[in-house]
Image (cartoon, rainbow over all chains, first blue to last red; front, side, top):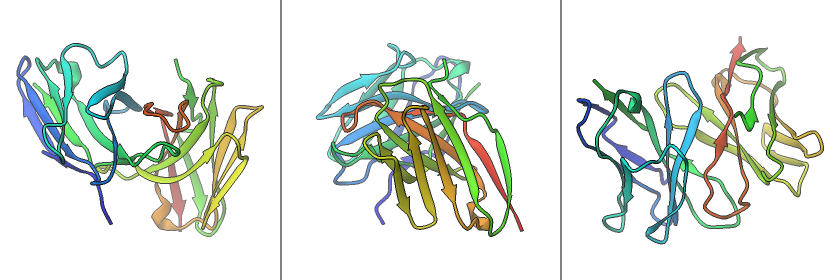
Amino acid sequence: EPEVTQTPSHQVTQMGQEVILRCVPISNHLYFYWYRQILGQKVEFLVSFYNNEISEKSEIFDDQFSVERPDGSNFTLKIRSTKLEDSAMYFCASRWASGSNEQFFGPGTRLTVL
Amino acid sequence: DQQVKQNSPSLSVQEGRISILNCDYTNSMFDYFLWYKKYPAEGPTFLISISSIKDKNEDGRFTVFLNKSAKHLSLHIVPSQPGDSAVYFCAASDSGGGADGLTFGKGTHLIIQP
């Protein structure tokens, strides 16, 4: 069964450094998402991406964040200058098309900012 | 600002019995609702969804009920099995098919007792 994959599974970085989290969505899906879950809190929407552009972003998704689909398979989240409070699980999700909103999630990347 | 609320942090149910997980929402624009199951160190797994034009959707042991007037939905699992022990998230969107991100509740930890 096709699934969303994410790399790395765990990323440790120093405060102020740039990180890139990578995702390979399900191959025929058209909508892509990033979410995060800070330890002990709920899953929060960051950004959605469709047709090579951002469709929607939350107030969390400020100027330090960016997303890109550099080729036909990868979908990346870049955090330019990490802060301690960026430590969280980051989940990528994808969805096939409009008409339903079943999003399929990857296993997540645990980001630890020291 | 909790637009999706799961008021029971945990629920313990005997194996073979019915598990009922509840979810309330405040945003009347939500028109699509989903339940996800999550094991530790994994991403959320899609279980079942319901559109606001319906009041019930069933898939095997899982049934979701929607009461729009009360802004309430519930997930019924019958019979409950040990493998159902996980955290269950209620999620909602107001797109009905666009690119909007999901708004999640805080989750209910379901424990199935043998």
